[in-house]
Image (cartoon, rainbow, N blue to C red; front, top):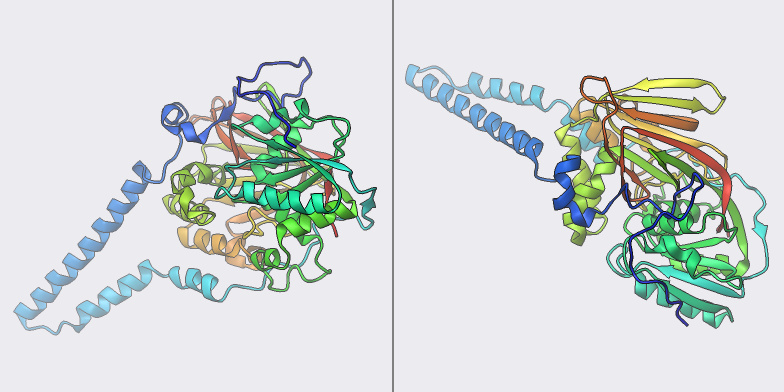
Amino acid sequence: MHAECMSPQPFGRMRSISWDGCDVSDIFVDIRDLPRIASSLQLPSLLDVEAGRLLACSLVAAASTWLLVCLLDWGCFMLGFPTWPVYAGACVAMALLLRGVPAVINAALRPPAPAAATRPLQQQSIGVRQRPRCVLIVFNPNSGTGRAKATADRCREQLLAAGIRVEEFRTQHVGHARLIADVLRPDHEAVIVVGGDGTVHEVMNGLHGHDIPLAIVPAGTGNGLATSLMQARLPSGQEGEGAGPSQMMLQEDPVDWATRNVLSGSIVRIDSLDIAAGRRRFDGAALVYFGLCAEVDIVAEPLRFLGSLRFDLAAVCQLLKLKALGPTTIEAVLQDGSNRTLNGPFLAIYIGNSQHWTDKMRAVPSAVLDDGLMELLVIKVTNRTNLLRGFLLLESGAHVNDAQARECIEILKVRSASFTFWDSSHSKPAPGIFNVDGEIFRHEGYVRVGCHSQSQGVFAGR
């Protein structure tokens, strides 16, 4: 049975309250419409001026070095001098230029031990309630590599076999899942989200004010929140013993995991994010990015055919450009209630409560989903080799144990944080973009992120 929803239409402002989770069209950035908006927002691209300058400088340096060595070799030959000092000097110069490369190679081949295990749920007792009798499956057919429909079909078949009534809500356009309240009925006792972090984000905003539990079936490209929830089922101590998140995901099929939790009625309550940008206020599922991390989705969009690999490629390209955010001030309320101010330059900023940024990257290994706190991670501007080493160690969380990586990556536990992005003269806030759960939004130079403690019920923990 299918639940038909309203046809695509512009969002209208229907609320007078200070929450706008279903009404963010004026700050939402559709990355499929990049050519039209790129100039006004100065959005990055894979092959931009910085990339061309970096490539040109590298080629000129390599050509100049080769030409100098050839000239010296010819001069030594003509004068009858031995040529070995020329090549020895060239080798020494190359070693000095590439002195940080061994550390990067070592991080890839022999990384430090993964970060210590942190259970992503602090709740020791799992809330158990009766198995739902009717559920609504929401799926985004465009999530990830386009396999969400097949995943939703598998999920529906398993639930029907268990005697649960199932209805479907297929999203037809960007932002459609924010309208889920229009098709939600009193007999819907749970909502199953088949998609990525972006689909979860839309559904959570659409269900704002409704106390109905979610089951998340990862079918997107990132799947950071779902991966963190799946890790909660591992026996204590296994998370950090070298079994990376990709191996963990293979231990149980995501559809089997999600339906098993629904059938058992195993529910926990996790935090959500309270985000204010200009005149708009909305919910976040788990992840907020600024700078390089926010730009990766935009840069990687033309490479969607590569799957999740496109994010790694785009991140390395952006990192090599070493293009920092403009002047930035972060005012954070720490775990103990004290205040701390951080000033840039920063290459990237993250705030959220998910250990995993993607199903392959446990970038914030101490994050907990239900403790009323968030993790603030800043990547500082430093040399490229330290940044590359830190990026390679993000996958397992080993960067928290590595001295070189800690020089450029700092993590704080916070209750809330305000971000002010200044223009080059530091005289007034400057507009820009930020990323919430894989969705891109505009800001006018100021963003605040807080935490709704244990505000959303989810099926997990079994």
